[in-house]
Image (cartoon, rainbow, N blue to C red; front, side, top):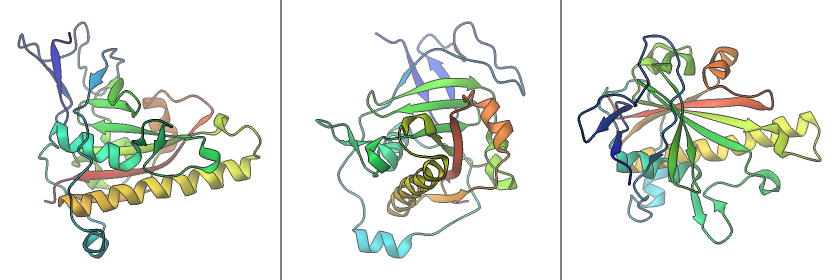
Length: 225
């Protein structure tokens, strides 16, 4: 049984024994370090929310964020809405993908680190520690948004397509996911903004991506300021 729970908005591990960081890992300022503990999400709530037409009416981009963290349940619901599994028997998702290769991964970046969303296991797999929110975009507001989602395409999943189509399909599939996030945020009263204005090389290094993985977009999510 796991003895720890993840405080998602602050991205710090709060152990029952009162330990404030991952065992054996220090949070050195400005340095990304690699934790190892997988962190379970609450089961996503797949009902409720505002009517679709009202959500479409309220969908918008916002650039000012409160530093209030997202509760664990809200984060779980957000990630499921973005690209979770809505048909468990087949493993199909809430957003389509070309050839159903499901090439997009979502990295969740907060003040304390970055983690990879695993929709099948409904958990976060930490990849690095340290505040790298500023790397998710070149605008100032990204540093204060409690959550920044980074959409990463794995081109190696396309077996029979050339580079042009790999880029086209991945960009299109990322757009579907991003719009899911916009609609979820409109339903839940959250602020969000998607962007491509990113230092992709620096962020790729911080997220420990391999050469086949390509950053497509990033998207801030939080409560309105």
